[in-house]
Image (cartoon, rainbow, N blue to C red; front, side):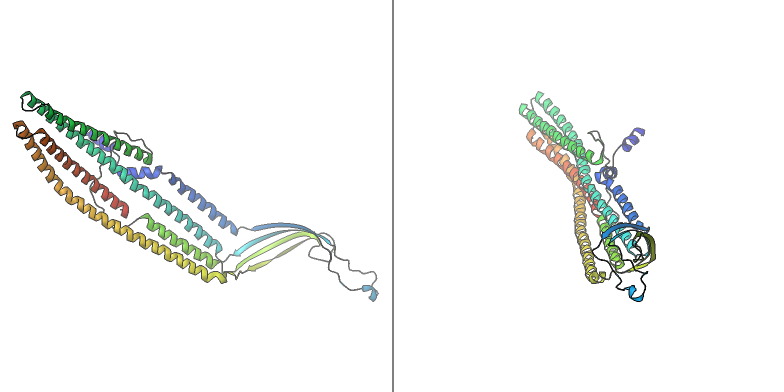
Length: 413
């Protein structure tokens, strides 16, 4: 019992393959990169509330300057004169500004960044989810090969029994070498079939090994899933979350458009040093400062607001149409798989009866061969017919399991 438990524990289920394939897929690393990018962008947006510092300097020479056209000597003021402004001028300023209200631009940008990152993550979900369909194909391909190999082994054992039976009949003169050769041909064909199945299974295992990042060999045992249809037929595909993320991105863009219409308030302090300073009539270097509040309002955004909103509504309608189309096609696939499952259930109900009847016919043929009333060729025909019936059941069972898991993939249940 302990050995049986350890053997069952060592089997790999299809759910294990899903998780391992997802963890091993190169794109899984992109989740972390998206989060890093989101963090950097949000941090940069928040830095807009930090004081902004601007340093500028200039040196100019101008061909003419402002003069005061008053001759004070006419008034007897010969000792008083107004010096002209120098044509070469120099200045350096340092301005510090602080936003008080940005009209919601920072908040809108943060929403847009988060919406974009969520859309990228949902796109990754869709890509990684598609890996499950490929795992289904490989997993059930391996199961089918394994079951057919086991059935092939039993068939070869049965052919060996018939070979020995014909050999004994030859000794009694009831059969000849051609009869024995006929059985030998079927044995060689069965071995060829075993070789083909083993190579197919080896190829499936090799590809699945690449998907899950683990080495699987011919001794690897896969756990056969239990035949159980999903409890609900509702659709929970990751594509639906992707459509929702796209709609959130549209809403975030609308917030940016609305924020662009608002005025912006802030205060500033400017310190400078130059010639001339604030006093244009002072012809020497001096320091100065200016402080105040600033209001900016770009009303040009009103010109394009209507077109931008109409464009967003068009994008929203496109996303909704894509969502409805996806649900429509998925529902069609779901209905198709449900009917396929019903088909396989009915086929399996008759498979056991066919196998039982073929088994009876084959055993009767063996008795007739021993009595000399039937040829070995006819016996091999009946044996092959029974083998084909058993293989049909194997294929129907595995195909029904695969169809059930394809239905689970279609609905994400």
